[in-house]
Image (tube, rainbow, N blue to C red; front, side, top):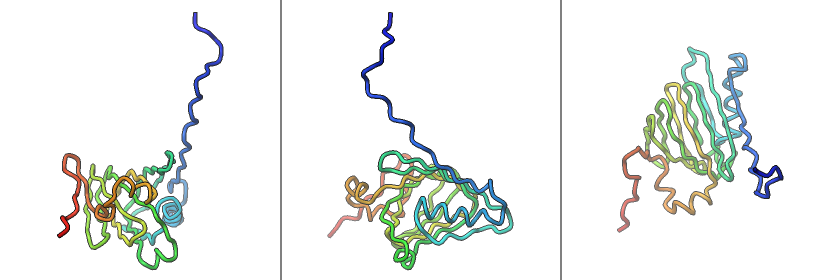
Length: 179
């Protein structure tokens, strides 16, 4: 017969809290500004503009902290997000993002490179350097936000990986040989 006494095993950690921001709880005129504030606070501060003014805007961000990594599941209507030099000075940030495209396509410009990730692709971008993200259709992404120090310890050539698409079944991008 099994004992009914308390176990001496370490109790399981409580589940991580999930924070959700959903524009559908708001009237249409307030949705985009709410979304802009949410992504600036929980992803990367940037200048965000709406695309497709002819239809209602809808977006949702679900965020969970897993140790030192913040993981976000985001869905949104067409938009663009620009982090330029002025934005970097006003709102410094030193994180690296790894984005998995779940639906839709995007266009990421960073460091004179253009990445065109599609469904199933990974792409890395760096919030300490200017970037432009453009989305012309409804999109869903899973984004991991990682401190630069933590990411650079594992990927010493991090700067080379920004704005490069990593596709399933293809080798990861490699730096050009140095002369």
